[in-house]
Image 1 (cartoon, rainbow, N blue to C red):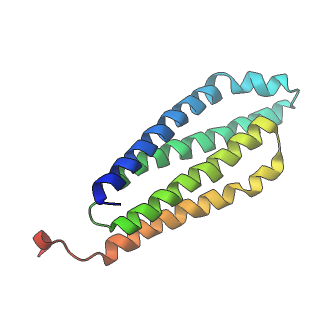
Image 2 (cartoon, helix red, strand yellow):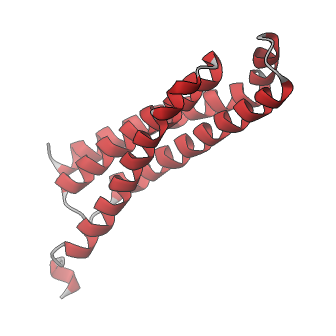
Length: 142
């Protein structure tokens, strides 16, 4: 895959994930509390679940936006960019997705999946840093 098609793919997925993040966040802000209260959850648990959902949506959106920046990076190899993209996407699915499901279904064991998404993001960010630090200088860098 060439640089342009990789960047186009990353921007496409970032756009989809960003839009989805806004939709999910809107549900969290405008419908989730009533949904959870309708399931007869204790008020303290509703507050806890709303916070968990908010964290998932916030990190989801941050990483969708980060992918837009990733698509434009020229100081890292396409290989590093592709791996960071896969890891960021996996992070959204695992971290945010597990929190969304945990909250909607009130299934606490799904919280065991959440750290896998966090680890995916950590690896992606460190991969970007290492790839930039070890990249060969561009001809204009001298």
